[in-house]
Image (cartoon, rainbow, N blue to C red; front, side, top):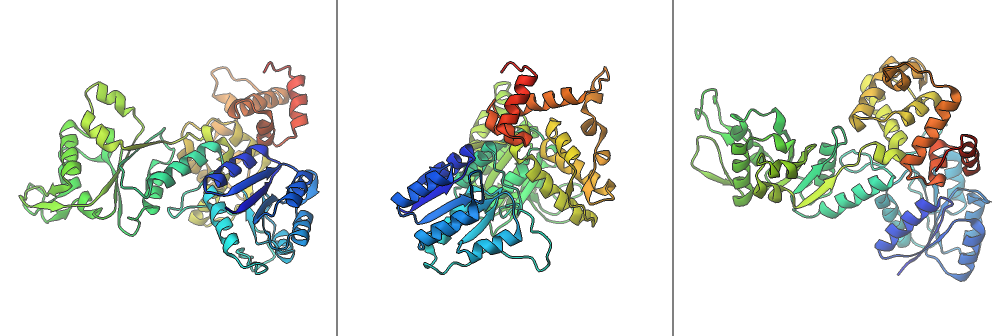
Length: 453
């Protein structure tokens, strides 16, 4: 069993990474400081070392040199939230196997570790693509095959773990969550990680189909079968044959349509409207809803047998507030997307905008975030999105109250601290990172405002 050492001063992140690698059959030890890491390195021969570049008590590049000097066969992977080309080049020259920028997903690091273990000793090949210009390299946003973002929050990591767990199976998946949390993106991610990825992914909005046309949409029809059927039509089931059929807002289907869907799922056969010929189909079903289908079942509005057929595996999508650590990563992704779509070159967000993003509660989740950023990029004339480009409810959240109240600087700061503590379940170390202050500073501000926590 390969031995891995993780050197990372962020204890929560370090333990999470240790747990994930242990699940993949690695022997993993963790160090939160360079001195402890050096002790472990002197006692154990590690196959791979994952170390943060910026440690509080030591330079990560110097630590790399120390490791390669005493353990030349150990493969070293550097982790950092501060991706710089110069540092990457220096790391490669000093013998690092690779260099990965935070945020990254567990699957990214597992693949990197596997490659490092396969690499020949002393034959380290960088997987970094250095830019052709002298512009600084931006930290890459990790994406899966469906072009979706994989966050680093505990909620996002759990979501990704569930996606990777169910994707290789043919189980029907029911995706639930608030509006705007990315249900179709999640369904596409499951499809892209499955053995059906080479075949069609067909997405259908059940809420947009009149019940009279649902049979035709699902199963197709033959010419002349009803008024307006001027030619043969292939339905969604046939179009998705061999692939995946995603039914969004499945709770909106009429009771009659539910019976037809259940029959198709049970028999794996369909009949086009106006035809007596049965067609065999091989389709994986993924459904989504922002309603409580179990409550609909109890009220008799949704068939219980269909519910259980669709709910072989359920995935609850977290709201944006539940994955708050991912907020700016998502924002950066949507910024790049907006730049491409609008042919703009906005490079980032002002500090004021970042603070406004972190205070706002995002009821529309990722969809709202994407729309806000696209609008702000369109309105921006400089290199950064400024506060003036944001909608009023985000730029000035206090103005949404019936009684207009101007927050003073102290009230603003106090409000931010309370929200950060709530979002991190009152973990002061995590809250300090969220607020981008030291833990000592956070304690001082808590005492200053006499917050009873």
